[in-house]
Length: 106
Image 1 (cartoon, rainbow, N blue to C red):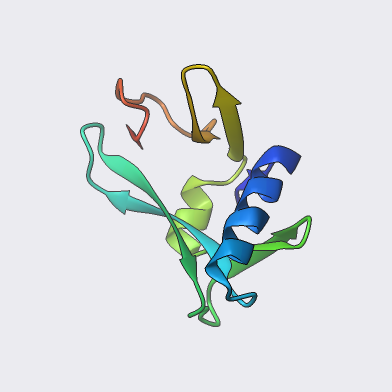
Image 2: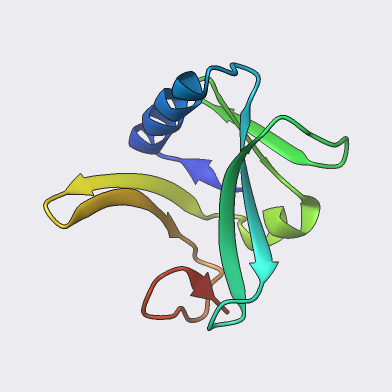
């Protein structure tokens, strides 16, 4: 299952609060596609199924389906805010290669 840095958890918590729905969880998924074979997908979700894997980081619930959780095992989600822009980045030790945009891997 993916872990969140303190910075990422803080930013996700801020975004959930802005949505005005405190029951939302961050869903992190891996889908077939992208230029390297798989792509990451992240969105807020309130529809959590019994077979989802769930963890909590600093009050933020993170969920993944079973297949995605396997591919994200050991991965870390971070949030970076710098001169070149801000955004979330996933560091995944399971990725053998990734594309130039950083949005897909194999």
